[in-house]
Length: 97
Image (cartoon, rainbow, N blue to C red; front, side, top):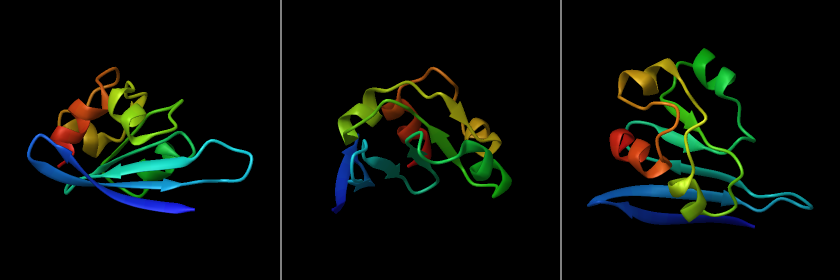
């Protein structure tokens, strides 16, 4: 099943994307106006090569988990926006929305 949900970060709207996979944790991403946070299924190296504004979290199963998780890696474009490794997903989304 694929779930698309509008979420609020402060007063800004972001889009949550959840893809349930067989015998696996879900694939998750939360997309802001400027960039997005993705789960560990997606590659930060590829995101960097594509020159996108993205950060990655791991060990997440819900949108709330993504917001509470620590950023594990970020592309150079995300870092230019102020995203740093160790900050919470919600903090990073505020910078990417």
